Length: 250
Image (cartoon, rainbow, N blue to C red; front, side, top):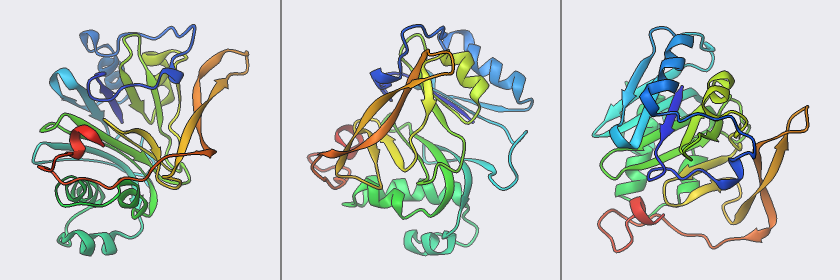
């Protein structure tokens, strides 16, 4: 899978930027999408306009961690992995028996956005299994992505030469777009457009970047760790139409 988001949708953390990055402008002339298509023949590229792009392929996938894609009411979602408590979540969100993992994630997001107030960390924590997902809501121009608590599915994030956020399960794609300015996405964490990176396992704690150094001694992005001493206030998810709409304030 591949996602590239403009800075207005998902601001890349400064700590991911390495001093000597060798990154490229991922969205210019479709350079990174073309690379992805060359590595994964038959891949599907979804143009999100000025917001960025999504891409996925069923080629070269782990059969135990399949990739899924769906669009529901202007909500685009890439999912990889499997959810263990599917039946429970279908009942929780009022979904029919045919709903799969990617539909469950979209409905969880819609519930979070429209019918809260639920803390976002609780919604992600309710999903049990091995997974990553990347979601984009074109109606509010917001992104929402997460990784499971064990980091079971390969998932990386980084920044290109223009400071745009790049996400992928493929290391070579990350190197092509971000050079040395990327790192594994922190397990047990989620990211929202306005809330940035947070831990859903430790929602009251801040996350601090720790420089990632390769075998040659070069700084390659940063790993984000839970800071046990730095705590933040917990906040719920305001409903759409309230004075503090999550889409722009969470």
